[in-house]
Image (cartoon, rainbow, N blue to C red; front, side, top):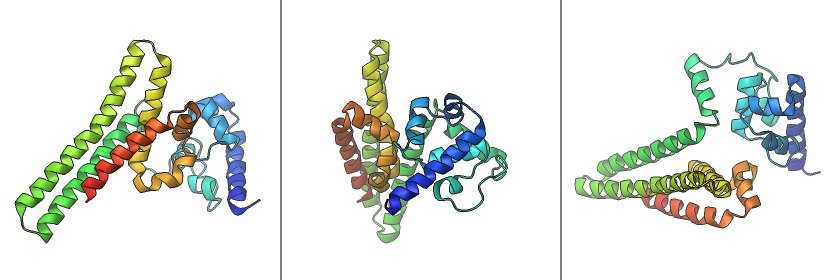
Length: 229
């Protein structure tokens, strides 16, 4: 067993310790941390990895430190929420909501891109006092941002149309595409190193929709690279 496999086994053992100590059924435990029972089963059996957001959810809801879960370092338990202010606890619980988290993630992505555009604009003015050049670059960047938001908007519209037509298979496809694209857009250059631990990405592999995902992601990345250029 190599080092990576041993680390994976150790993480699984710590996760099993948390699960068994909860006294909950697999279904109840998965619900408590915002996962579907099938998704939790994949994590518990090692098919899917324990991600940082999931470890944070376990810390929030069961009091086992995420750092300990992921690395084995530090104390095993904390008093529930003892390191969070009321506002931080509220924001974390909202961010883990299965209903709202994808909408919030899209908003966060847009905010990050807006900040990049703003930083670049003011940076251009500092390095080059040509206001028109900065304005032109900013206009182009905002046009690119609009194209990125259009991708997600159109995916939502397709998902809604499938739902209205009772096409559950089509709805599932567009839901999976949207979720995986949001994660990939958020993580940017980190995506390749973490996608194998992402259940949303594995869902695309299983259902044969990777080609559409890669095409859309390449388009988004091209738009982002133009913003950064």
